[in-house]
Length: 472
Ligand code: ADP
Ligand code: MG
Image (tube, rainbow, N blue to C red; front, side):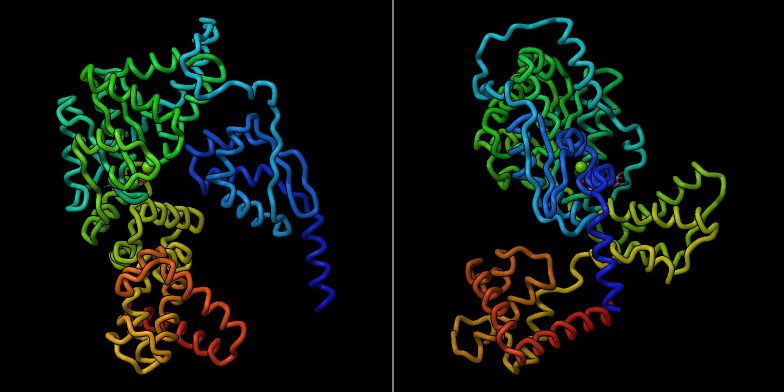
């Protein structure tokens, strides 16, 4: 047995990392927009014992990638080769690095021919509107009705609400609505649809190739500017500066600006106050979490769409449709993803999956579904276990017989839910997030030192998970 194991791990480490596979995974996990903008051009240089060396063209790109995506990239690399525990960068284009990004007023020399091809290669290429994301196939429910109506209104009657700011969590349909607006308006108007990631990438690229003037003109000449995921513009002062001027110029000349984000304008972090306040001055609408009815309607609509496109009529049982609508709650993107998997299954096996098979195909999505375990449930079970009341747990009293259960519940909340530290703190009578950290660390340490406590926590964990399973 031992032999086999050693052999296996030796084999494993001999295997070279396949960068192409890493790239495919990066594209899938981080999304094609981020991939195309930042990750695609990473060159793989060399693999060492426990780290890899990759190369990017500029220091800016290195910092950008390192500050935002490095953890996720390393995780992906580790999935392919678990020995790798570090990523190092080299810069391939040192010479051109000396251009000062902040120095925007410099007089740029412009080579016209080059400009044309640059614009062609970049802006147009990314100004793609997906015709399959339109108003007709956007299913409406109470959570997204206002966002839908405002988007429709804006496409019919430009600059009615200006800017229009749509926000909501991932996979709620923001990009779908932006696409729909783009599709409606592009027949009659000059439309630019770009993600904030792309906007910034083009901005940097324009500076480096001395084409800031073209960049500005291009954006300032649009009638409808759609910017997706504006929260990614955080921190970069020079870009925010440019964006702010573009934004004002557009609004002044009556162009329509539509922005999407994952949070409300005042919640955007590291975005200039004046930009936030201009956003707040427009029409701000949120898309909320979907309810069961909306998800059920979307499942039906997607199945119909599928039937239209393929002559073989796959019809998923009502039981499975209802199961999906009630279980895949995190986002509509996941719901659509789940349906696609079921469709692939039925193609491969030439039959529709049973409920048990559906559960197996969607195992990871079902586990991911949020709110499986609530803090409230954790508190209830921990209180039962330690025979204290919930009032005592949530009180400010610091008697030892209360402190340990409280810390345990906080620890389990961190372990078993996806709530952030401040959110957990709030659920424990508004305790500070530093208290949450302290509790988590204390229990982590005690688990190592104290066998009894460790097994109590395992019991509690199982109890909580078991309870939840039975409730569903
Ligand atoms: P977001 O940009 O908010 O993260 P997307 O617009 O990319 O989300 O939506 C994720 C997926 O769900 C897309 O395939 C989109 O077409 C689909 N989708 C979202 N909301 C709806 C809806 N109300 N009706 C139909 N499809 C939807
Ligand atoms: Mg989106």
